[in-house]
Each structure stands twice: as structure tokens, then as C-alpha cells.
Length: 316
Image 1 (tube, one colour):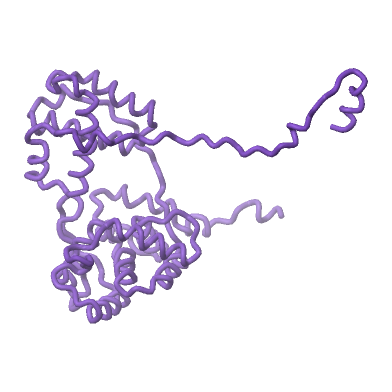
Image 2: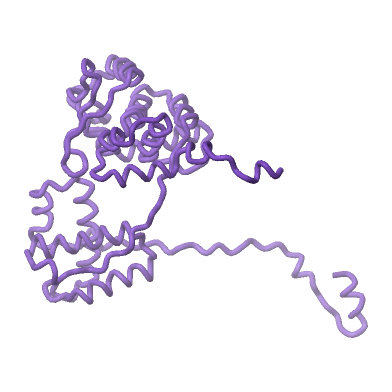
């Protein structure tokens, strides 16, 4: 810069002081979506009632009603009975272009719409065939055994430690954990019954010696009544609180990666595979209908990499 200035000083004066000013980088923030209309948007008669009659889970009811309220709001000036399949596709395309919604969200929004036309109004299914996105092949995020151990050691509260241990030891979904009842624990057969899980199916999972020891200690301290893990005000434990306590424990353990409850379930399946457990047993424990769903864990096991020598190692 100095030589450049010296070479041109007789021809022109160049003030480059502004170049020395350090400016903060401009961070483009993604606009947040406005859902304020949901509180004032009414659903068509029979929508919520049929969701309950068909015994959809609370989570599914919450998702369907929220997404269908968005649909109703979008077509607020129209009679929903007159909305065509092409218009529905255009609505979904607008969401993709504007908000880059995930394939999972797109499918859930489609299902919420199809539920209204096909279940509530009992319209013919083929009339509302909506283009489905190609399913993304995403590998599950997992924790190592050491990381799971560090999280449990960092969890000092006995209820919290037992709760997280149960999710990992039994490969449970968060909803399955909070719906466990005291009577579901069978210490004589060393099994735990999971009732009304995804797809309204019951199954049994293994009760480990370590988890049984924790449960007995937890029971003596907290004396739960009906629900195995009760909230402070009674009733089942809050699913949202599970996420919070897990993230807190992970931070205490020095784990910087994003951690969520389902990672414990993923980690259980992966660690079982690494121990040589037959994948069909893992399928049954997780409650998967298809073996293909369970097989995705074979792509994240350490054995896939440890059993093969990398050619680079011979060259260095």
C-alpha cells in the first residue's frame, strides 16, 4: 500500500484511511415465520373431534391442527371445499420456495390437509393426490458410550439421571418414556412394557440390572404413584423438560455438539449393533415395523470403519 501511494503522490492524493477501519461482518439472518394467526384461526367442524376419535397421539394432533390452521389462514377468502389439488400443490410450493421447509414438514403438512379432505369430508382419495417429496436419507446423530457416560455422571438429580438412563437403556422415544407407568416395570421378568407406542402398538423392552438399581433408588426417594416419572404438579413428566435437562447435562459434561433426547435412542441401537446383538432383536426393542428402518444404524457403527485398513496408513 505504501509503494502504491508513493508512486501516485505527484499525480493525485489518495486517502485510504477508510480501508483501515475494521467493520463488523454483515450477518444475514433468516426471517422468522409469523404464526400469530393460529390463535385466532378456527378449524372446520369435526377436524379436532375426528383426530381424537381416531386416537391420534397428542403430538400428531398438535402438529396437524397447527399446520392445517396455516392452510385455512392461507385460503381464508375461499371456500375450502372449492380449493383444487393444483392450488394445494401451489400452496406447498410457495412454502418450499419461501421458507425452504424440510421434507418431513412438507409430508406432515400434506397429511394434515389430506386428513381434512379424505377423513373429515370423506372425499375420494385420488382427487387430492399431492406430490410427495423424495425422502432424504439422513443418518442418525449418535453419542459415543463415553459421551453417554459423561452425561449421566454430570446429572446429579436422581430423577433426571434415572429418566435419561431409561431412555438410553431401553431405546425409548421421549413420548414412550413420559407415558410409562409404575406397573409397567416387571423386575421379576426383567422387562418393561411399552404401551400404545407409535402406531398404537405395545412391546416389551429389556430391563437392565443397572437401570433396575437406579429405579429402586429413585422409587425410594420420590415414591411415584401412577406415572413412573411424574411432573412437579402431578401427571406425566413434561417432554419439553427432558430436552432441557439433557442439554444442561451435556453442557456440564463438556459436550459441544447439539444433543437431543432421540440421540439416546439412536445411540442405544448403534451401541447394541457394535456389541454384536442381532439386528432383529434391536428392531423389536425399538418397535420398528420394517428392518430397513433399523438397518440405517449399520451405517454409523464404528465397526464399519475399524474392520478395514485405510490404504493411506501404508503410505505414510
